[in-house]
Image (cartoon, rainbow, N blue to C red):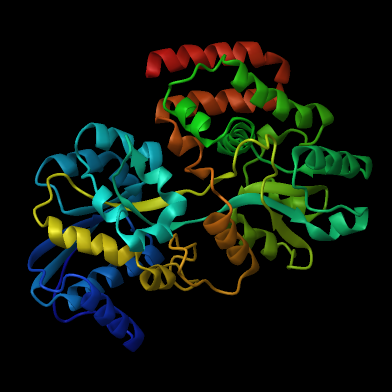
Length: 421
């Protein structure tokens, strides 16, 4: 899809127009020329959001022409480097943290640290670490969603259990659940990435966000004793029999019936799974959520919250308009509207944005905005380079099934680290 947004524009609500006018009054309003944007928001709801953003920004700046090209989300993963290299656009969509690294190292993304120094960007503090490489910021976030432990509130009440705040409480709860004839956690590792989520949390709670990200960058050996401590902690649950049997044969969706039917009491998963659990009959009296508990009290909470981003190409022709667009998409009002249930249906990153009345959206927003001081992880298969992520997740799944293989697994992952990085 290739569109130039000039009159006639898509219809804008009165509130959107007034908000845009207020925004334009507080920032540069004399933008001119052409602003070229390439976006991978190709699914229907995100596409409508992106087209609306382009049209609204165009309306705000009468002397500016906003040219928007929308490409297939999967195709963009292989096209982005070429797009940034030859006749680059001004603004592109991508992802945070180590997924930015190849394009930062190649000099294809522009340093936008000066934007992050502005007072309004303090409201985006939860993701600043995920947008930072070499102490500089290389883009801005527009949406993310939380991960955490979704659990059967009714079963917890039946067994007299409270939401755990520490690892010791987590393990004690698990033992009580096992004693009741249930499994503690459902999981489906057939497609590997769900095991990556467990590693993200146990490792970051054991060693901290900075250690986890250094491991993802290849700076720490997999045979390091601190990595072994992560696996020792994880193995406590595996040896107890905490996870459902034969999880390597299930996808994440195929693992849902175990929590829906009460054979397992919790699921470490992203918020996207809530709809399926509700469809299975778990209303808010039966389903609840808690933040993954503390393992090492000396490290702050880090959370998996995959974050979608906008970046300015280093070869951008209209840098002033591009920076203004990044200010626009990170503003509290815009992030409120584009993340609403009838739009992206996710969480605004701006801590001053508003959210709907869904219980889990509210809990996730509060957690990520106020209690994720350690940092925001992008998930194992985004934070690690693709080849390392693939080899790594194979090892994580194998560990969950055959924990006695740990020495061999770590040796293989270390060999892969030395070869890949």
